[in-house]
Length: 236
Image 1 (cartoon, helix red, strand yellow):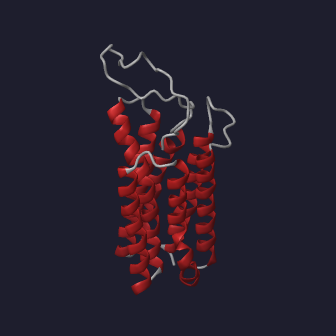
Image 2 (image 1 turned 135 degrees about the horizontal axis):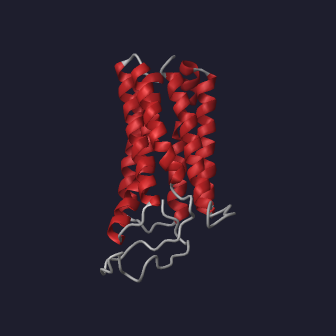
């Protein structure tokens, strides 16, 4: 996600690319480690996700895990490309829209295999309908209002992420306490990262590792917790 309020300075020359053509480029000064956490996470998630799908016996579970893997690769892959690159302004804007949209999509993608493998009947349909409905709504709203206040859309993502609180008792009964504790731990990691992003704090080493990197670290740790929870759910 783009860090609004960070210093922006010319990267090459005002409005010119390497060849001297009049092409506007992204001018955000980024910490040197920006995007590397997600760049490393994407291939590791691909390997872990494919392994999980192969080892899962039920077809429904495999489909749910494939959705989780796809949405995770969308999030971490696009984020790595977006944050590591130096893009023309139009490309930067498109990648930024995907970056924001993929957060809601990955939240829904994370809950999908858990709902498929741990819930039954109406509970499963209700959770999937709510979480994917929220994802579609948030994607639409973020693309129509890209200038929305940072605090507003961050809070909405956090609220969406904690939707599963209403189903934790069923997850506990079906999957066991370890899965629930992993879900809670992952949720806390995501929330801590979101707080860093919303407040722009801490920002100890702006040239190398700033508040946005703490946000990315929270997403990586949260995804790891939830991946283990999904792995355990596949073996219930």
